[in-house]
Length: 111
Length: 135
Image (cartoon, rainbow over the protein chains, first blue to last red):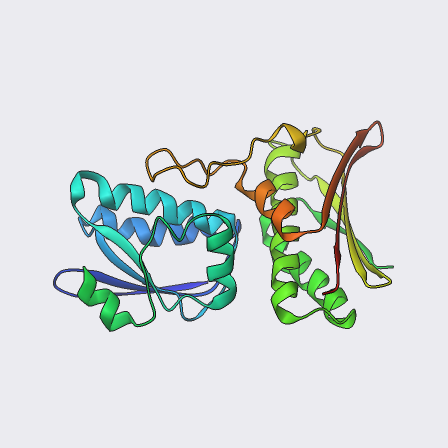
């Protein structure tokens, strides 16, 4: 798994590549916390190169969304979610907790 | 019938998912279903490592994966703490962000993704059997 962060003035664009499972989820969580610990609560997560995500990754997403939405200070939105991962997120009822966008520019503009 | 013993460590989840994918691909499953099978196997193995073997060092469990006709059968056998998956409540998928529970999601996904999930605990250990028919 690989995470790269691009800081815009008003939000962070975080791209996650590869596989997020129970083995890599702690590192994924740490990368997300880097943003929130810096007071960056508006986050676009680009998932276009994500190959796999288990419920361990969903857990990290949920914790980050809770943290970001606290005091209405921000939000995590998902961009370019691969079909298989979107289906699993839907099954888990997660698509109701995250806005999703087919385009990262649109996602960045939404925050 | 490939049966492999894996150390109860998360680093081996990749290999377990690969093993399931190889058998499913040879058995003619679609790539979409193969992803579901990998996810179910990952969640099952994660539960064994996280719960059955919580705090246990140098533990291992076996994974057997085979086709029987048009059905794939995944069996995981561990000697850890038993775990009554029927006691796991279905997560409330309509709960709002603040009330959303993540516990039980793995078991829920396994049940949704597979045709059958059966768990049995005895003196010789815990056996989880999951099956799915080719579409």
